Length: 280
Image 1 (cartoon, rainbow, N blue to C red):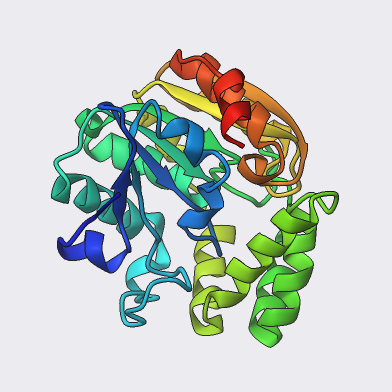
Image 2: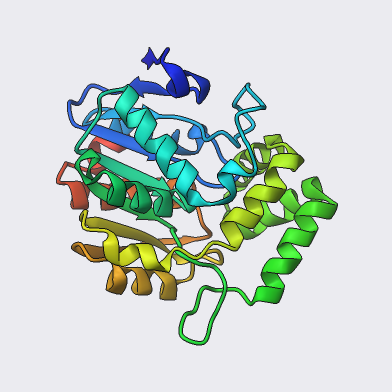
Protein backbone atom coordinates (compact mmCIF):
# COMPACT_ATOMS: atom_id res chain seq x y z
CA UNK A 1 0.00 0.00 0.00
CA UNK A 2 1.29 3.43 -0.94
CA UNK A 3 0.14 6.41 1.14
CA UNK A 4 0.18 9.59 -0.89
CA UNK A 5 1.93 12.63 0.55
CA UNK A 6 0.76 15.16 -2.00
CA UNK A 7 -1.54 18.09 -1.39
CA UNK A 8 -5.19 17.19 -1.53
CA UNK A 9 -4.46 13.45 -1.88
CA UNK A 10 -2.78 13.36 1.53
CA UNK A 11 -5.51 15.45 3.17
CA UNK A 12 -8.17 13.05 1.85
CA UNK A 13 -6.37 9.90 3.11
CA UNK A 14 -5.68 8.77 -0.45
CA UNK A 15 -3.76 5.57 -1.00
CA UNK A 16 -2.90 3.33 -3.92
CA UNK A 17 -3.14 -0.44 -3.55
CA UNK A 18 -3.18 -3.41 -5.89
CA UNK A 19 -0.92 -5.34 -8.21
CA UNK A 20 -2.52 -4.40 -11.54
CA UNK A 21 -1.30 -1.75 -13.96
CA UNK A 22 -4.59 -0.25 -15.12
CA UNK A 23 -5.83 2.45 -12.72
CA UNK A 24 -9.19 2.20 -10.96
CA UNK A 25 -10.70 4.90 -8.73
CA UNK A 26 -13.24 4.06 -6.01
CA UNK A 27 -15.34 7.00 -4.77
CA UNK A 28 -17.86 6.65 -1.91
CA UNK A 29 -21.13 8.51 -1.38
CA UNK A 30 -22.89 10.61 1.29
CA UNK A 31 -21.92 9.69 4.83
CA UNK A 32 -19.43 7.04 3.76
CA UNK A 33 -15.68 6.65 3.60
CA UNK A 34 -13.32 4.42 1.66
CA UNK A 35 -14.01 1.45 3.97
CA UNK A 36 -17.36 1.04 2.13
CA UNK A 37 -15.30 -0.80 -0.54
CA UNK A 38 -13.51 -3.22 1.82
CA UNK A 39 -15.47 -6.34 0.83
CA UNK A 40 -14.61 -6.09 -2.88
CA UNK A 41 -11.00 -4.92 -2.55
CA UNK A 42 -9.36 -8.37 -2.11
CA UNK A 43 -10.48 -9.31 -5.59
CA UNK A 44 -10.08 -6.02 -7.45
CA UNK A 45 -6.53 -5.52 -6.20
CA UNK A 46 -5.48 -8.60 -8.20
CA UNK A 47 -6.45 -6.85 -11.42
CA UNK A 48 -6.06 -3.10 -10.89
CA UNK A 49 -3.99 -0.33 -9.36
CA UNK A 50 -6.67 1.14 -7.10
CA UNK A 51 -6.85 4.68 -5.77
CA UNK A 52 -8.96 4.99 -2.61
CA UNK A 53 -9.76 8.26 -0.84
CA UNK A 54 -12.27 9.94 1.48
CA UNK A 55 -14.29 12.99 0.46
CA UNK A 56 -13.81 16.16 2.58
CA UNK A 57 -17.14 15.59 4.36
CA UNK A 58 -16.15 12.16 5.65
CA UNK A 59 -15.74 11.71 9.40
CA UNK A 60 -12.36 10.08 8.73
CA UNK A 61 -10.84 13.29 7.30
CA UNK A 62 -8.82 14.93 10.07
CA UNK A 63 -8.81 18.52 8.77
CA UNK A 64 -12.29 19.79 9.68
CA UNK A 65 -11.71 23.03 7.72
CA UNK A 66 -11.56 21.17 4.40
CA UNK A 67 -15.32 21.04 3.99
CA UNK A 68 -16.55 24.53 3.06
CA UNK A 69 -20.37 24.45 2.72
CA UNK A 70 -20.34 27.32 0.21
CA UNK A 71 -17.68 25.74 -1.98
CA UNK A 72 -19.40 22.34 -1.90
CA UNK A 73 -22.92 23.65 -2.52
CA UNK A 74 -22.80 21.88 -5.90
CA UNK A 75 -21.11 18.78 -7.32
CA UNK A 76 -18.78 20.98 -9.37
CA UNK A 77 -16.28 21.42 -6.52
CA UNK A 78 -16.22 17.65 -5.88
CA UNK A 79 -15.57 17.04 -9.59
CA UNK A 80 -12.66 19.50 -9.45
CA UNK A 81 -11.28 17.69 -6.37
CA UNK A 82 -11.49 14.37 -8.23
CA UNK A 83 -9.56 15.82 -11.16
CA UNK A 84 -6.93 17.24 -8.76
CA UNK A 85 -6.44 13.85 -7.09
CA UNK A 86 -6.00 12.11 -10.45
CA UNK A 87 -3.55 14.78 -11.62
CA UNK A 88 -1.54 14.64 -8.37
CA UNK A 89 -1.08 10.90 -8.89
CA UNK A 90 -0.50 11.05 -12.67
CA UNK A 91 -3.47 8.76 -13.33
CA UNK A 92 -5.44 8.81 -16.55
CA UNK A 93 -7.62 6.53 -18.66
CA UNK A 94 -8.91 5.10 -15.35
CA UNK A 95 -11.93 2.97 -14.54
CA UNK A 96 -13.98 5.13 -12.17
CA UNK A 97 -16.47 3.46 -9.80
CA UNK A 98 -18.66 6.07 -8.15
CA UNK A 99 -21.30 5.17 -5.58
CA UNK A 100 -24.42 7.30 -5.17
CA UNK A 101 -23.52 11.04 -5.35
CA UNK A 102 -20.06 10.11 -6.64
CA UNK A 103 -21.60 8.66 -9.78
CA UNK A 104 -22.73 12.11 -10.91
CA UNK A 105 -19.46 13.68 -9.70
CA UNK A 106 -17.59 11.27 -11.99
CA UNK A 107 -19.91 12.18 -14.88
CA UNK A 108 -19.19 15.90 -14.39
CA UNK A 109 -15.43 15.32 -14.11
CA UNK A 110 -15.50 13.23 -17.31
CA UNK A 111 -17.03 16.12 -19.26
CA UNK A 112 -14.24 18.43 -18.09
CA UNK A 113 -11.33 16.02 -18.63
CA UNK A 114 -12.46 12.99 -20.69
CA UNK A 115 -8.89 11.66 -21.08
CA UNK A 116 -8.78 10.86 -17.36
CA UNK A 117 -11.55 8.24 -17.66
CA UNK A 118 -11.69 5.01 -19.62
CA UNK A 119 -15.05 3.90 -18.19
CA UNK A 120 -17.54 5.19 -15.63
CA UNK A 121 -19.28 2.64 -13.39
CA UNK A 122 -22.20 4.37 -11.69
CA UNK A 123 -23.52 2.52 -8.64
CA UNK A 124 -26.96 3.59 -7.41
CA UNK A 125 -26.35 6.99 -8.99
CA UNK A 126 -29.04 9.60 -9.59
CA UNK A 127 -29.05 12.92 -11.47
CA UNK A 128 -31.98 14.13 -9.36
CA UNK A 129 -34.08 12.84 -6.47
CA UNK A 130 -37.23 14.96 -6.80
CA UNK A 131 -40.13 13.92 -9.03
CA UNK A 132 -41.21 16.37 -11.73
CA UNK A 133 -43.92 16.15 -14.38
CA UNK A 134 -41.64 14.30 -16.79
CA UNK A 135 -39.13 12.65 -14.42
CA UNK A 136 -39.45 10.09 -11.63
CA UNK A 137 -36.62 10.73 -9.18
CA UNK A 138 -38.23 8.74 -6.38
CA UNK A 139 -39.24 11.49 -3.93
CA UNK A 140 -41.84 14.24 -3.67
CA UNK A 141 -40.35 17.64 -2.85
CA UNK A 142 -42.15 17.53 0.51
CA UNK A 143 -40.39 14.22 1.34
CA UNK A 144 -36.99 15.75 0.61
CA UNK A 145 -37.87 18.76 2.76
CA UNK A 146 -38.75 16.38 5.59
CA UNK A 147 -35.37 14.61 5.24
CA UNK A 148 -33.54 17.96 5.43
CA UNK A 149 -35.60 18.99 8.45
CA UNK A 150 -34.80 15.71 10.26
CA UNK A 151 -31.06 16.06 9.51
CA UNK A 152 -31.22 19.57 10.97
CA UNK A 153 -33.19 18.80 14.13
CA UNK A 154 -31.70 15.46 15.25
CA UNK A 155 -28.92 14.24 13.00
CA UNK A 156 -27.89 11.15 14.99
CA UNK A 157 -31.45 9.85 15.27
CA UNK A 158 -32.01 10.50 11.56
CA UNK A 159 -28.73 8.71 10.72
CA UNK A 160 -29.92 5.54 12.47
CA UNK A 161 -33.28 5.52 10.69
CA UNK A 162 -31.75 6.44 7.30
CA UNK A 163 -29.15 3.67 7.54
CA UNK A 164 -31.94 1.16 8.25
CA UNK A 165 -33.79 2.38 5.13
CA UNK A 166 -30.84 2.23 2.70
CA UNK A 167 -28.98 -0.92 3.84
CA UNK A 168 -30.68 -4.32 3.71
CA UNK A 169 -31.68 -5.07 7.34
CA UNK A 170 -31.02 -8.77 6.64
CA UNK A 171 -27.32 -7.82 6.66
CA UNK A 172 -26.89 -6.33 10.16
CA UNK A 173 -23.08 -6.05 9.91
CA UNK A 174 -23.29 -3.93 6.76
CA UNK A 175 -26.06 -1.86 8.32
CA UNK A 176 -23.94 -1.27 11.41
CA UNK A 177 -20.92 -0.37 9.26
CA UNK A 178 -22.74 2.32 7.28
CA UNK A 179 -24.53 3.68 10.36
CA UNK A 180 -21.16 4.10 12.10
CA UNK A 181 -19.72 5.93 9.06
CA UNK A 182 -22.78 8.15 8.82
CA UNK A 183 -22.65 9.09 12.51
CA UNK A 184 -18.96 9.97 12.27
CA UNK A 185 -19.84 12.81 9.89
CA UNK A 186 -20.20 16.09 11.77
CA UNK A 187 -23.82 17.40 11.87
CA UNK A 188 -22.68 20.84 10.68
CA UNK A 189 -21.31 19.12 7.57
CA UNK A 190 -24.16 16.64 7.16
CA UNK A 191 -26.85 19.33 6.81
CA UNK A 192 -25.43 21.47 3.97
CA UNK A 193 -24.24 18.32 2.21
CA UNK A 194 -27.73 16.79 2.43
CA UNK A 195 -29.08 19.94 0.75
CA UNK A 196 -26.44 19.72 -1.99
CA UNK A 197 -27.24 16.05 -2.65
CA UNK A 198 -31.00 15.85 -2.27
CA UNK A 199 -31.79 19.10 -4.10
CA UNK A 200 -29.30 18.38 -6.90
CA UNK A 201 -30.48 18.30 -10.50
CA UNK A 202 -27.72 17.19 -12.88
CA UNK A 203 -29.94 15.84 -15.66
CA UNK A 204 -28.43 18.31 -18.14
CA UNK A 205 -24.96 16.80 -17.63
CA UNK A 206 -25.90 13.37 -18.98
CA UNK A 207 -25.99 14.27 -22.66
CA UNK A 208 -22.45 15.70 -22.36
CA UNK A 209 -21.02 12.40 -21.04
CA UNK A 210 -19.18 10.61 -23.86
CA UNK A 211 -17.18 8.15 -21.71
CA UNK A 212 -18.64 4.58 -21.84
CA UNK A 213 -20.85 4.03 -18.78
CA UNK A 214 -22.11 1.03 -16.86
CA UNK A 215 -24.99 1.74 -14.49
CA UNK A 216 -25.12 -0.81 -11.66
CA UNK A 217 -28.61 -0.80 -10.20
CA UNK A 218 -29.77 -2.69 -7.09
CA UNK A 219 -33.16 -4.34 -7.71
CA UNK A 220 -34.86 -2.55 -4.82
CA UNK A 221 -33.20 0.79 -4.03
CA UNK A 222 -35.29 3.42 -2.23
CA UNK A 223 -32.70 6.14 -2.95
CA UNK A 224 -32.38 5.62 -6.72
CA UNK A 225 -35.30 3.61 -8.13
CA UNK A 226 -35.04 1.60 -11.36
CA UNK A 227 -36.72 4.42 -13.30
CA UNK A 228 -33.66 6.58 -12.61
CA UNK A 229 -31.26 3.99 -14.04
CA UNK A 230 -33.37 3.74 -17.22
CA UNK A 231 -33.51 7.53 -17.53
CA UNK A 232 -29.72 7.79 -17.20
CA UNK A 233 -29.13 5.10 -19.80
CA UNK A 234 -31.38 6.90 -22.27
CA UNK A 235 -29.81 10.34 -21.68
CA UNK A 236 -26.08 9.55 -21.43
CA UNK A 237 -24.47 10.41 -24.76
CA UNK A 238 -21.79 7.70 -24.68
CA UNK A 239 -22.44 3.96 -24.83
CA UNK A 240 -24.22 2.91 -21.64
CA UNK A 241 -25.74 -0.24 -20.19
CA UNK A 242 -27.68 -1.10 -17.03
CA UNK A 243 -26.61 -4.12 -14.94
CA UNK A 244 -28.93 -5.27 -12.17
CA UNK A 245 -27.70 -6.64 -8.83
CA UNK A 246 -30.23 -8.63 -6.78
CA UNK A 247 -30.27 -6.90 -3.42
CA UNK A 248 -32.41 -4.67 -1.24
CA UNK A 249 -31.03 -1.23 -0.51
CA UNK A 250 -28.48 1.21 -1.84
CA UNK A 251 -25.21 -0.63 -1.09
CA UNK A 252 -24.66 -3.63 -3.39
CA UNK A 253 -20.91 -3.50 -2.67
CA UNK A 254 -21.78 -4.36 0.95
CA UNK A 255 -24.91 -6.50 0.81
CA UNK A 256 -24.31 -8.41 -2.46
CA UNK A 257 -20.56 -8.07 -2.92
CA UNK A 258 -20.03 -11.42 -4.66
CA UNK A 259 -22.64 -10.66 -7.31
CA UNK A 260 -21.33 -7.08 -7.54
CA UNK A 261 -17.84 -8.37 -8.35
CA UNK A 262 -19.28 -10.84 -10.88
CA UNK A 263 -21.00 -7.95 -12.66
CA UNK A 264 -17.76 -5.93 -12.63
CA UNK A 265 -15.89 -8.93 -14.01
CA UNK A 266 -18.36 -9.29 -16.84
CA UNK A 267 -18.22 -5.59 -17.70
CA UNK A 268 -14.46 -5.15 -17.39
CA UNK A 269 -13.47 -8.54 -18.79
CA UNK A 270 -11.75 -10.35 -15.95
CA UNK A 271 -12.36 -13.72 -14.30
CA UNK A 272 -14.79 -13.46 -11.45
CA UNK A 273 -16.01 -15.44 -8.53
CA UNK A 274 -13.73 -18.47 -8.14
CA UNK A 275 -10.76 -16.36 -7.04
CA UNK A 276 -12.98 -14.25 -4.82
CA UNK A 277 -14.35 -17.23 -2.91
CA UNK A 278 -10.79 -18.38 -2.18
CA UNK A 279 -10.02 -14.98 -0.67
CA UNK A 280 -13.09 -14.47 1.54
